[in-house]
Image 1 (tube, helix red, strand yellow):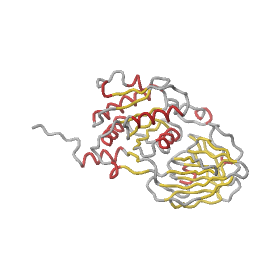
Image 2: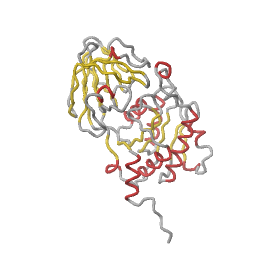
Image 3: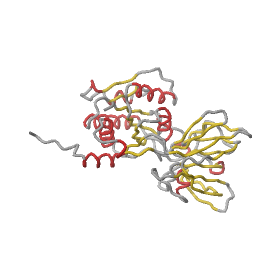
Image 4: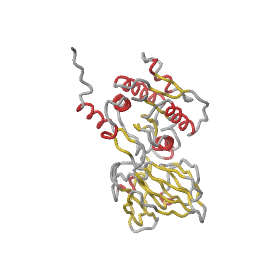
Length: 329
């Protein structure tokens, strides 16, 4: 039995893609209400303690101010940097406090940070970001209940969760990074830009998940060679603007682009591919690494990511185990 950690990215669902595309806005009040229901669902279903972290907009703090079980709620405080490092610090502090199960409110990028910080964690990713391939759309009361059942040990992890795939990137200098959904090489792009990708700039794509019913980079592969969360392979694409095969994909919510596909192939788990610069490497939508003319990285897809909670599957298991049944003696 371990405490539950809930990590909230206050800025997810609020960036420039609301202007550049037609993504919806995730308001602070909506997140606050979600957190309240998550905490109540978790405490009702076995979680003994829930850890939260203060952030600039006091979303988590306000979410729990009227909950009766105050002694079971722990609020972490630390000096904020007002960037992605705050998510790293929250995950590190919660892990140090004994949390092994986390609910993450954010997009692909937020979940990527938590997965990179706590690679052996059990995650329940809830969508509040833009493209939302990795996070799930689940009512917060149910999500909290599922996380409570897992962190309390009432439902076994290995039989009822799955270990997600990750795209691993190894640089020539020995540094590494990863993506939970997609790693792509961009040409003629800018490091750190938050604008949606231009289809003409996409050169190579590596997908841990290649899903047609999604938005962003994943459906580029999903429209040709689908690959789900538990399939034992990944997908690699070579893109070229004037290629014979052309597909139209929602590169961001409500924003469709035409992209040329030169090749699309399965990649075996663990298979290593060398990618040459120049270009920008982006991970789950975030432009992170600039490659020079003669620089290269090695990319592989492996099923070594965090364990992922699927609430429907966990709740079904709990019913089979008769967790919800109480007999009066």
